[in-house]
Length: 420
Image 1 (tube, helix red, strand yellow):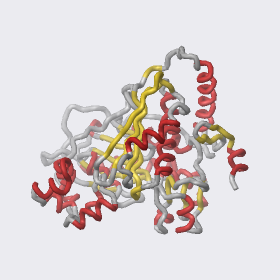
Image 2: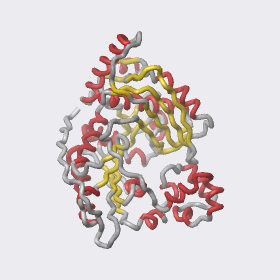
Image 3: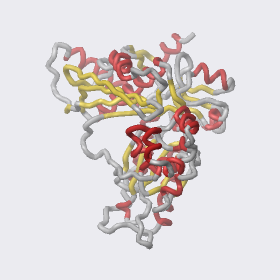
Image 4: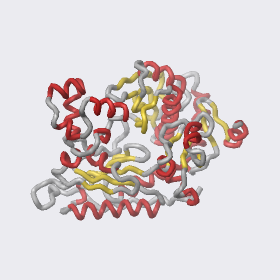
């Protein structure tokens, strides 16, 4: 694994009291959405340049799912979270690369550290997506904002050897949509006041939460472009979207007042979600994705010196409806093994309709500071905690030396022998 030097954080802007405008009395677009291009694959290509330009995917070969696919592989029909066996059927010359434990999290941290060299207002939304608010930088013109953003895009590429796409707008919703329009290496600017006009001609499936099946249903009802929602009569919108019709209409108009939320305060919860490229109906696939999120969240909880008591699993259907179910442990913990057995039961209770899902998320709450454990299993858990700390250190170095499977921990060498 190559070394990725951790950049020094040097904030280039400070909060100012004046409102940034473009000289014509309108607010500047200052919200950036960063969306890394095929992140896991890009990181693997950075350490193995011979993989660039080829049909590559990251995922497990046996009973695994595709976590990330290169754009060359996507052109052949490979998508996330397609089962790996199916991916090899649709793309026989696909190069399947196993996960490199710990590497993606480290590169993600470095990527967002580079973002914080530009502005202190950075929201790390997931391992490969986030929002930046450059309003504190005091930019006076759109050209200045765009130059700063393009320079950041270039620095990320030069230092980490990965590519990212940016959307620049006045709010998070429009910036997110813009960042996904011209991937990879995209850079789309939506000027202030042009949000509705930007969204109007787009296919309705570009709006967050509208998957292929929902898009097909809406097209059958006469909705094909975002502008069709804006032009719709209230009664018709209510019949089509139900109680959430106002939110859908606001989204179609490009309205969003959510602020960029930094992580400077102690976390009150830890969460991760995955929006699937195509709706997923297989229970085992969703369960594997949820368990993977547990494996990615608990090291962060340990790193912060916290413990958590409650796990919540949420599912979202293509028609915007969602459901969740939670379980609270008797005592807070920072270990994975108490939560693994609850993934299946909670998923069954939340996923009552058993329709295909658009999204699944795992959230840990009931956060407590690391304290002294007094129960009868304290000694056993402390042994597990020391083992977990060793695994975390190995993974932080980007070594694929150790993998976890539910309650079991085994060496990569043992895992290779186990494979047929």
